[in-house]
Structure formats: C-alpha cells, structure tokens
Amino acid sequence: MKYSTSQIGIFAFVLCLLGSLNKVAAQDTLRSDNIVLISTPSVVIANAIKEKTLPNPEIPSTKAPNLSYSNVPEIRLGIKPGINQVKPILIGSNSYAKLKNNYTKLGFGNYSSPLIEFYLNSLRSRSYHGNVFFKHYSAKGDEAYNNFSDNQLGGEVKRFFKKSTISMQGGYQRNAFHAYGLPDSLTDRNNPFFIDPAKRILSTFSLSGRMSNVPYDSASTRYDIGLTYYLFNGSTFIADPKEHDLLIDGNFSKLIQGIHHVELYTGLNVVSNSYPFTRTYFRFNPVYNLSIQSNLHMKLGINSTYYKDDASSGFYPFIVMDTRYELIPKKTISFIGITGDMIKNTNRTILGENRFTDPAGSVNAALTGNVAQPAFANTRYTQMYFGLKGNLSSTLGYLIRYNYRTAKNMVFFINDYTNSRGANFMAIAADAKVTTLTGEINYQFSEKIRLAATGNIYGYKVSGLSKAPQLPTTDLRINGTYNIGDKFLLKTDIYFMNQRYAYIADPIASPIGKFEKMKSLLDLNLGIDYRYSKTVSLFLNVNNITANRYMRWYNYRVYGINVHGGLAFTL
Image (cartoon, rainbow, N blue to C red):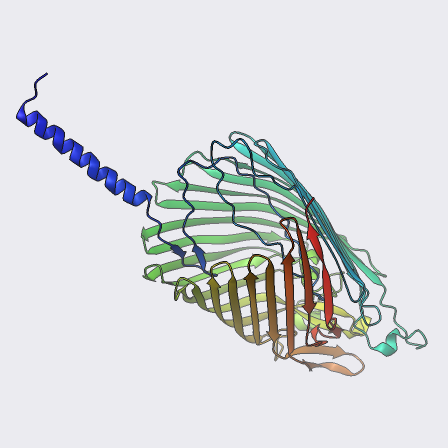
C-alpha cells in the first residue's frame, strides 16, 4: 500500500506525540518527592518502596485494644511493642509472610506488681476478623491500704460482606482499690476514731454492635450505625449503685459534586441510675465542609442536644465554625474557630477521671447553688480558638494555640470531710471561664530519634471560688525515643505540673472552707526495650526516678521509685 507524503507526516507526528506523553507519564509515575502533612504532631511520609510488580492485595489488618491504666496510684508501664516497616509482597510468590496470631507480655516489679497482657487475633481472612485480649496489673504498695488491682477482658468480631461490614465488641473492666487518703492515726485500729478504708470495686461491662457500608466511589453515601450498652457498678462498703447507659447512634456523610461534603451525627442516649433518676439525650449534629480553594478550607455546623431528666429539660444548640488557611504552602496553616457542646457527666465518666469520688454522685449544693440538681450536672460550654501549626523543616513540626472557654457546670473535685474525713472527693459543678495557651513541638529524625514536648498555661475564673480546685496553672510533658540498630529502644518521659490548691471544707477544722496548697510535681521515667529476636523482646522500666511522692489528688500520694521488668513474646 502506498502512502502519501501528508499521511506519512501525520503518522510521524502522532508517534512523536505519544512518545512525549509516555515520557511525561513516566516522569510522573517515577516521581518520589517526600510528602509532608501539616498537622500536629508532624507526620512525614517517606519515599515509597517501588516494585516493578503489583503487591499482593490481601493485606491482613488487626485492631489492638486501647488499654489504659489507673491514674492513682500511678505506675507508668513501659514501652509498647515496636512496629516494623511492612515490605511489599511480590506477585508471583506462592508463599505469604508468616504472621503471628498472639502476643504475650509478662512483667514483675517492686511493690509485688505483676503484669500480664495477652492478645489473640485471627489471621488472613476475606470474611471475618476477631480478637480477644486480657490484662492484669496490681501492686501491694508501700503504705497502708494503697493496694490496687486492675483487670480488663475484651474482644471483637467482624464479618465482611460485599457491601457492608458488621462488628460486635464486648468488654469487662474491674478496678479494686482502697480509699487510702486518710491520716495514719485514723487508720490505726487502736484509735477510737478508727476509719476502715474498705475495698472499693469499680466494674464496667460493655457491649456494642455496629454496621457500616462499603462505598464504591467518593460520591456514595457512607453510614456507620450502632448500638452500645454500658453497665457500671461503683461498690463501696456502704453503697452499691448501678448505672445503665444505652446509646443508639449513627454517622452519615456524602460528597456532592466533588466539593460539597456533608456529615450528620445523630444519637439517642438514655442513662438510668439506681438513685433513681433517668436522663435522656437526643443529639443532632449536621456539618458542612467546603474547600473554596486548595489552600482554604471551611467547616460550618451545629452541635445540638435535647436533654431531659427528672428535674429539668432543655434544648441546647451550639454553632460550629472552623476556617483553615495555608499561609505558606506545605509549611504553615493558620486556623480560627468557635464551637460548643454538652458534656454528659455520669458516674462512669466522673469516676473514670477521679476514682476516689463518692460513687453516689453527690453534689455540693452550697457551692453549686442548685439544690434541685440531681447527681452529676451536665457541662455545657462554648469556646473560641485560633493558632498556627506546621513544619519548620522536614523533621520539625510545631503548634501554637490560644483557647478561651466559658463553661456552665464545669466539674471540680473537693475533699469531703463531712462524711469521710477527706478520703472521698465530692464532684462539684460551678460556672467557669478558662483560658489556655498551648505550645507543641515535635522532632523526628528517620525512624531512630523522636522528641516531643507539649506545654500549657491556664487561667481560671470560677464562680464562687478564688481558685480552681486540684487544677494546675502550668504543665509540661516531654517524651522521646531512640532506636539503636532496631535492637535497643530507649524511652524517656518527663511530666511536670506546678503547684495546685485543694479546697478543704472541714466542719471541725475549717467550717467556712479554705484552700490548701499542693506542691508541684515532677515525674521522670526511663525505659529500655531489647529486641532479642523477631518474636522475643525484653523490657526494663524505672519510673518516678526522683522518688517524688507527689499528690495528683489531695491526700493521695503516688508510689515512690519503682522498677518493672519482663519479656514480651509471640508463639
């Protein structure tokens, strides 16, 4: 077949064009710039590991439980298991990476403090995932009655379908301890005024189920709906109050025309106590997100709650506005916003913050000025904030934030000398204005060195009180890790809190009430983790090195210096 000169020219032009497009595509595909996410803390995504063949799409996932230790008495436990970088699995290999479905950690320290942690997970499956875990930690202490025992047991099951995922979670937590914050003379059995700080047990049973869809594209409506139930029991030697907490809620979101993102959270929550009283909450929180430009993002919404109990009811809407602007591309983001909400205060949430609080949910009416208010009051707040966050370099990130909050019925803790001679705390509700100035800095050099520091300066104005009981005006936390050859992991954690004031309302010594100064605290902790092999590691932690028997809560001194060591392994 013969071709004309024009046909040959057109054909050559098309070949050149395809060649140039292929070159551009190749350049874009092979690009390997570092991507820096401007957030707090700073996260740096390293260069991708490129393979000429596609990775195996079947990558197992697992969800570790969020375990927490009691705050007082506090013995910080150590270094969590390290996570190694996952290498791509090449197609063409018939063998999968060998996975372990279990993890065990055993430790022991002075104060006769055993530690047991156990996790068991399912391995690869396209249809389901499951895990169970157990944890025990206890200590005898070095003073009378400050023994404690914390236990957790839980698990999760997920079933994966083509268009949805169904999951169920369950757990049980038991904390046993004594209200040991009493003068030694009162715990002396030879004293005619002897008080027995009998054992207390806080137990929580939880059960929840959720269902979420699997969207096929960004325009699909996403949903996540669920049912959650808590049964809380705060047993003491004189009371055994129970609390039922049932929540039905759902999250819904949709992206419209690629730029309009709308979200909705709604839920019905019923809390019932054995006092008795019943509280009902209905939440309806719509949010609209819009990216006007690539460097300007806005959010507008409402946090609204209808609330009703045996004494009162009301509807409380709060405006939510947030604007973020990228001042310097990939370096600095400025933000400003206002928000507000109602915080649900129950026995479970209050005793989770301060376990030595009276579990009967009593309120000091003399300070709150609301005698008809039952049990723990709900906190309502509005706040305004602004600040900057970003990266000074690829390894150094920062955050500066100013926050001003006005709160109705903010919760504080004071010692109850009327009924327990100071061993119990009473949760009081008072109106307050709180100013907070926060600074954060994060440094990370590859995977070897990480340092972080967070400091806060607080200002309080509390209705009816000259100071904020038990709260600091300054705190500082510094922590860091150093990885030596993927064999030794060194860790340090330093926590400082300046002096605070406890409010004493003793009908005998100070019937009109007074503030008692609490010394500042410094808690210094060091740890080392030695990875003997891929399946066995040893750890040693030295906590509260300064042996500062400080009080986080008035009358309750924490443990002195403590050493804790052991091993972690998989089978």
